[in-house]
Image (cartoon, rainbow, N blue to C red; front, top):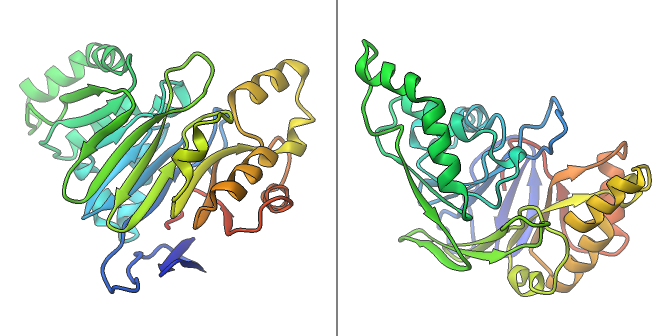
Length: 302
């Protein structure tokens, strides 16, 4: 699915194409859902990852399992910035495994496909230690590729790690990225807000509701938010109910939040259904929210 944005009103168009037209006639940023999954091994959903493409550059948020292959699929569907060798910048919301299990893939696979520029990663304290351990785990692979017969470079496997706090964490001529604290148990977790051209794109990461999120989300043209089904929640055991209510955002809670912040488009991702259909999940949101909302799938483009 692609959403073509003209002015402030979204239209839904089938197929993956470029988001091109605006009131000014200028090219606009694209949002690509590379993965919308959860820790559950869903065959149609890769691990969570979102690409914000601005000025022909890809900015990844998280790197769940399957991230590079999903990027390749988006590239082959017409998004040049997601060619694997061009994946050089990523932002990490938190260090849960479903959001980071694709990290070795992102470090190594684009390098074997001729990426020469080191990967730059921005994330919470702990991402440097994770990076160092990945490099140690794959040291023999790296040395064989660098020192053996395979044509390769000695730079594309390297990672420049930036451990972040709240505030502006990256800025260039195309995009400004702000980090804000999310609430996700004991994790040092973040939401990210991208200012690209005249658009604001906010990615919640994993979070339960908290007072600060209203100010973070307000003014978003696109709000990409995790969610669990309120009806599906009733099927969980008491232990899992305690966990999800403390760590994540229900459809009922998200509807009320969206009604207050009024995003141009609300995109659901990292959806926990527990047997509820996609349409039923959307109906849960629509009971208390009248704005535009879609339930995202892998390789949707907005």
